[in-house]
Length: 430
Image 1: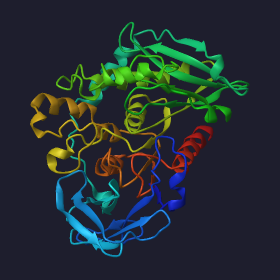
Image 2 (image 1 turned 120 degrees about the vertical axis):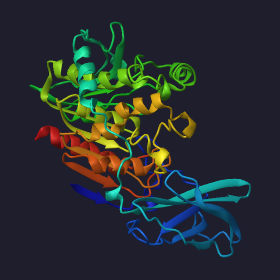
Image 3 (image 1 turned 120 degrees about the horizontal axis):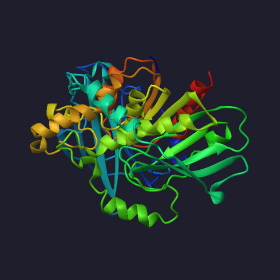
Image 4 (image 1 turned 90 degrees about the horizontal axis):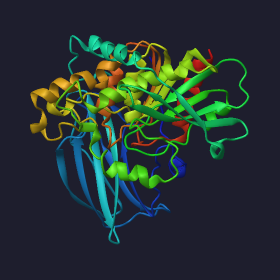
């Protein structure tokens, strides 16, 4: 397995992010572990240096902080208040006896406004073992659904969207039928305007929520057909964003837990098989080389990148940022709480739900990957716990390249975006 990590300097904090970006504030809260790579052996006690300064690096004297030290997404091992006479303090005293992540979070209030930062120490992360169980009929369960879906005519539709086209890329609103007759998956399809012969293609699967999809123009300008899809059965090129917002706050508000009591009707069954079908849609396009198709996404899209690569053998490579839905039962074993936090209330861990999640836990798809995959994440992610991400990485049997940016949260730096895109494109042009 290829692996690399780096710390990005604070100067990059203002850079534009593809998903989100770190905030630049007048008051800076800095939390720094005493190991440069943020990695520790089990039993070591990391020191977290805390500094409160202005944006011009002047110390904030007598700053009053509240802090918590905890294992990844679990209850605090220690919490309290400190007054920083000279703007600095060192917090220590805790370790981990098992592989995982230990996080120090700090809050401060200055002139009535709250600021927060954290740092996370990684303890022998390559030894993290997921808690989820692989059902004996996992492969048969999903093969049955894929075979059933293959009998439904895709009935593809492409509509040119002139206002979104560029001199080098034609942009279409595209859709195909999947899962049931009358049920469609929509996406934004970008095709090089002057393609010559067969093009490689990239499927981009979505993060959580519901919104328009602009399409991946940059990759299309380099000669790749790109297809950025939504999963909720609504066109992705609507100009009125209020429609998507209404859906997010209405019928799609709690979709990640819809029908989770029934493995045959859980919301993500249609999503998983339809993402796999999107690869078939691309492969059927006359300008696409069916032997050179990749998939990539972040968060929920990172999860869907893995499930799609498992379910459709046409996928040549996958690229995932901080994949969600990994080790969904971890919280029940005091090992992180994977998005979408189905068991944050442990009383919800009914027999039916525990049965369902075995078939939808991305760890079980990761265990069967055969194509190469690129994964990138950060230790400070407070949306998708790094314990669940690393646990999934550890069980992937195929070639994998892991890019770690320890201080990043649930966002990506430009360097990560570039690294993933280039890795996927290079794989598809070999």
